[in-house]
Amino acid sequence: MAMLQEFKDFAMKGNVVDLAVGVIIGAAFGKIVDSLVADIIMPPIGMLLGGLDFANYYVPLNGQAASLSLVEAKKLGAVLAYGNFFTILLNFIILAFVIFQMVRLVAKLRRDEAPASAPAEPAPPAEDIVLLREIRDSLRK
Image (cartoon, rainbow, N blue to C red; front, side, top):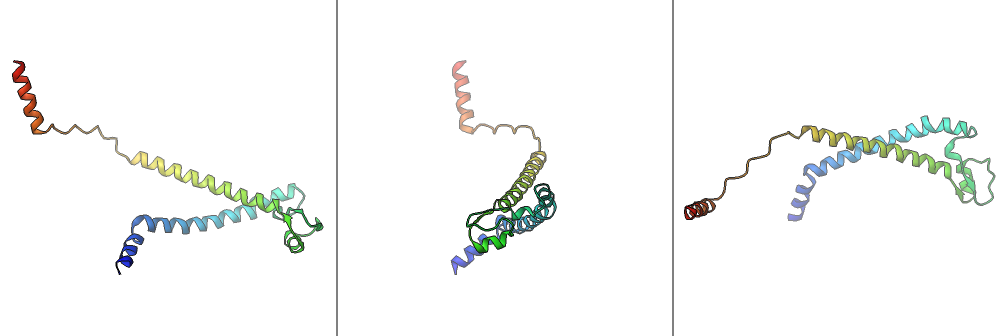
C-alpha cells in the first residue's frame, strides 16, 4: 500500500503532469509538422525533381522497376527509400528548430522575469565574532 501512495505522490507532482502535457502537445505538433512537410513543402520539391511524390523516390535493390511506387517496390524486395528518409529528416529539422526557438523564448522570459534586485546585505556577524573583535580592539589600545 505504501508503494501505491509513493507512486501517487510522484505522479501528482507538477513536473510529471507538465511532462505529460508536453508530450501530448508535442505529438499533436509533430502531426502538424508531418502534414506541413508532406502536403506543403515536399510536393513542390518533388515537382522540381521530376514530378513524382518525393517520398516515393527509392533505389531498387532487388531488380524492381524504377517506375513502381515505393509500396509496390517494397512488396517485391528491398529498396533504399531515400525520398522517405529526406522527408522524415526535414520533419526533424523543422521540429528541432521550433523547439529550439521555444526553449530560447522561455529562457529569455525567465531572464526578464528575474528581478534585478540589489545584492543582499551580508548577514551580521555572530555574537562571538563581535566579542572577539572588541577584545582585539581593546588589546590594541
